[in-house]
Amino acid sequence: MGHGDSPHGGGGMAGQPTGAPEPGGTMVQGTVTETMDSGGYTYLNVRTSTGPIWVATSQRVIEVGATVQTSGMVMRGFRSNTLDRTFDQLILTSTVEVLPTP
Picture 1 (spheres, rainbow, N blue to C red):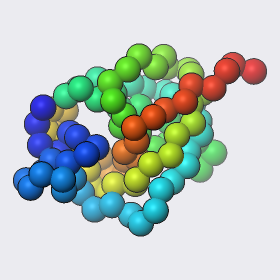
Picture 2 (cartoon, one colour):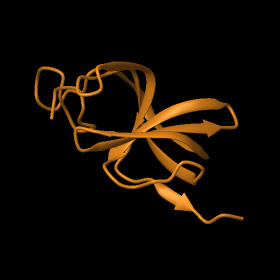
Picture 3 (spheres, rainbow, N blue to C red):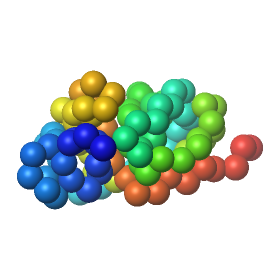
Picture 4 (cartoon, rainbow, N blue to C red):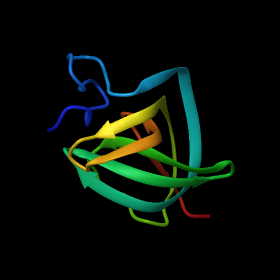
């Protein structure tokens, strides 16, 4: 796993994620429009009522089209070295709940 890919640390010194966290947690709910796995994590692009946001969680299978709900720490400028990508805004979370289809 490369530095900056762990919701629990990375980016140079252990325990300090790459990017700047915002205070408090943020709750999101929406539809998954894209997924990718890298470095032991699953990245989800979630379409919410306020626009799309990326969510990173421990690697697991979540289908495109699923409705999910989660909360976590918002990171701005989060760098994933294994994806060779910087996310403008990303929510780091340990759990993502897949909601039943209505």
